Image 1 (cartoon, rainbow, N blue to C red):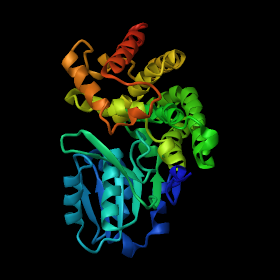
Image 2 (tube, one colour):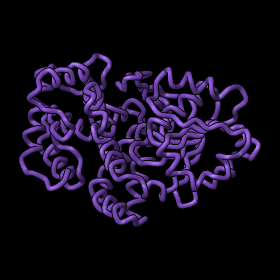
Image 3 (spheres, one colour):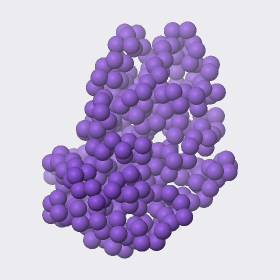
Image 4 (cartoon, rainbow, N blue to C red):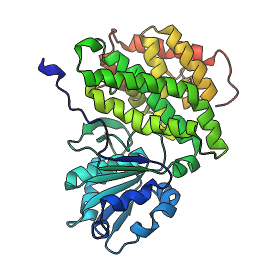
Length: 369
């Protein structure tokens, strides 16, 4: 059954997640190679990571590009020009946008990529894929690269010091791994073992996140580097990426990410992070599937963590029908992963799901947004 042939990329070739991890860069790259490094970072990311990067960033010959914008064709083309001919490695320092851009650049240049995440908002540091956007910030599609990321160095102290909304978004993005995979891999017994391993990990992640997210967020507020905090960070960065890497198309994305993509067409949602919008998308997916107990359980958890349970919390008024129509139209594009759901989808059924979530999400007012 060739349709089950999948590429298994369990993770980066090397992963270190501990205080002092970034210093391991020199175990993999010589000073001569690091003089030919091309660093891609963002303004905030650079400020956050600088204390850990100083010896290498300033090596004569190394190039640094401080990037702002989207992972788009034009952005990557510009960076290819900046990189020039004689680079040896691409090192991305930042969040998902920067890391996706660095991975796409490394692929174009035929170079290994090193990822140094400064936030734990997605599994971008882990996964050898990039999500392409247009310059307006609308999600287009994703591209899977043939090579695993070479080296992922995670300094938990940098993640601890980052704004908590990023960790919260990572929790949302990673919870989706289970709820989406379970829809895609409907008959696991007939699928390759690696897919089933991916599903097992996704379920473990869901349990870890529902159990430990609240304390991890509190530990971050108190700037305590605890086991709960590190577990949640590893769940997001390593666990989330591992699920997709083990099960490929059977464990990647379903309706929650399609709803996220639909939300991106309204400019006011740009202020909310990817995982925050994905988290809301899980609620819509569970409503579409008629899983009322799941919807209720998640809404209760989201209120404890501070994830959105209504469109209103994403700056969208459900009564503005033209806005909601645009979300629905984009979410139901033929290319979107929502069509993997085993239900008949129409603009009416999607609108009904959005309205159902809105009603349930509002019922008990939560003390914090």
